[in-house]
Length: 350
Length: 82
Image 1 (cartoon, helix red, strand yellow):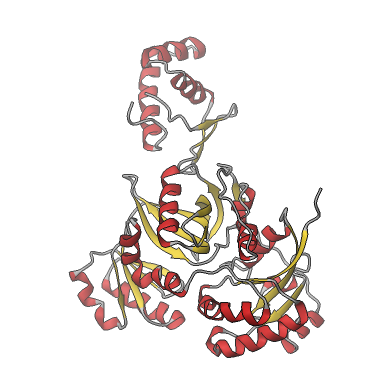
Image 2 (spheres, chains in turn green, yellow):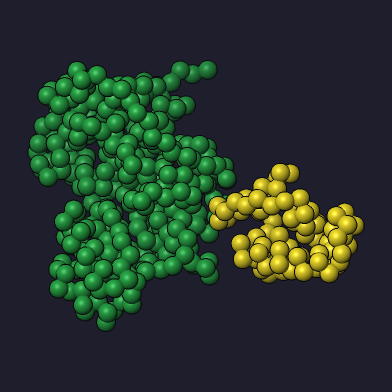
């Protein structure tokens, strides 16, 4: 038996809360790797991210500056962390931080020897909610008609292009279904106050939501894809339980999207399947979803595949996955010593 | 009428549709009907087997089978091409 290669991987998205980040599921996947013995460096934005205190999963943690601080301060912080830890791969897991990491990727590699496996800036922008309609046309997948608005004053005129109900969406997160222009105005203010402008207005398509967690090699190959239907949804619209599906058509669409766009890295595709069996792409998230551990449970360890590709290994596409596997999330109270909270709060390390 | 080929049915009456992720439970009569459908039996054959096994009159079984089939169709468990 060959021994596992020891590596150090930094992972963000440790907010394992009711609207969870993908960090902890990604870490669980890496800890179960058959190829690597992984030391995990957690990167956090807030002192109460639960992953900070999960010592069995996260070996050491550092706080990093918010994306709004700019990439210079992020680079400075990563330089310090790298001097301490010798990181080989970074997996950023927040939409809002990806722009910075994509921009820094060449420098992280050349100056610090840190690998990433991220989409290009063009790929990242191409699937943005505001241009998803065009993305769908380019990649042969149906997308509900949408447009960006920058002011609530534009809402009354929406009736010329849309019929109610319609969907009001934030730039990065949040979506609400508005049945009237008054509701649309209300959601516009609520969501823009939280996530800023623009707001995306999208045609409402009725049906069942089905999602796919997938990974592309950046050369037009879909390395893995597992479709899932949410079985239990929280009031924030997050999956609290879900089941893997046997849906060949969905796999084919995913292969087409990943192949055409030459997507590099992990992603989540969110679809609506209509009563007539048609699929509409609602969103393409440019990172693994928080339920990515279901893929591991189904026999496809996507985070491990990402790390292997980041390290230059040739990874063959997964060909099968288990159908009818469920994930059921749970909450858990960790007991934390004040000294740990003090350390991350004052020193930014734990 | 044919049950979709990929539908998983257990001895306990638990039914799982792997295309939609939906799951259902049925009683022994429902389980027997689904099994007979899977075997490709015609409606008349299903009715006579249920009548024989559960000692119910034929018209009741015929009506219940019609209702049950409608339910299976609405849950997308039947092969619509059939």
